[in-house]
Length: 459
Image (cartoon, rainbow, N blue to C red; front, side, top):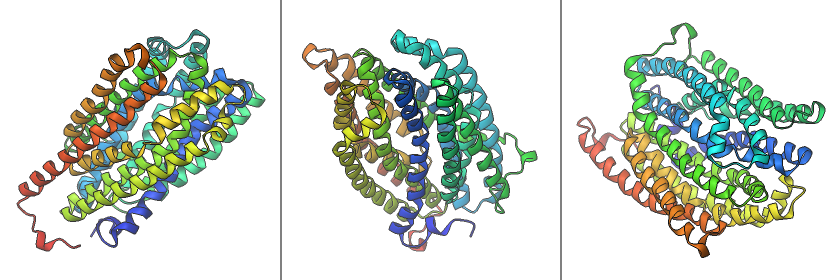
């Protein structure tokens, strides 16, 4: 059988853990790219530059997430075909995914370079931060083709069970990123331009490595550059699964842009603390979000192989793991919050205090976000992408925006604490809705599969 044994066979708990740990480490390294940017400019250029880099995060994610969602579609498509032992479909999906990544990256670069300043002004970014933020954002977007190639390539590798490769590639790129950050900022006095340029170069390295890995494979995932093209069936499956995921990610970011605009209203000192805390809590987020990626690929391959019972057990296991990891991670960053924030901010006690507020209200209940992500990923792994998109748009975007324009506008509730509470509330409501939707969709999917025989499913 063509499928990876650790996903379709063997003890589920240890297979899930072994699969997820490299994803966590890879995601942490990816976050360290941004952390290195913030730490270097914070220590050598001051807290205003931290605010400048941090101010670009929500609007950058808004633009990028639409296209990153397509990489999810590519991964799920490969997982279904690989689990079902359909080598031709795997081959065509891989050779459709990379051209899709190239077009996505070029499009993102054009959007980012042309509209960066306009987007930042729409977010009411303070004038003393705007110039630096614009420079950082424009240079950052010049590397989007590299970023898209890495995202699509690593999504394909994970779909067939390889989570170690992306970790190695990002480790290599991460070392280069940190070294170049220090050189560009300290030796060439390039400030935010230096850290963004370092990020582009390191992304280029990770993109080259993931392409070489695909070219060296000996199975149906092997990439042959001369055979790259848009295969109609595979392209539209990537779009069908990936576009709703991308739209969901983009709409998530819209609510975050609105929240960032509200944060900006508290001034640049608060923005600095918020940016640093957001980067710290990101380490908790990627640790729990890794189980969502695991759920997508385990459910995807199990669905392709018609091992539906194993798919459901994978989900429950991921939900349990994400709860434990989320609670531990959220608690640790709160306990050591002041020390962690001091790594980023060295010239403002007020900014550190502002960061502690965010850590308390967002990172502590972060496991709720993990529960929501696992159920959303499980639906996508089964092949449903529109349903989780609709639920998430209503549950996340709708509730947060309603919160901001109702509760947050009341004078006594116009505080950062009340603003941050919108996160935990929206995570809880959306998780419950996604879990219900998954089991409804699961029952319909299994019932519609006329070839499925529960007696033949190996446990």
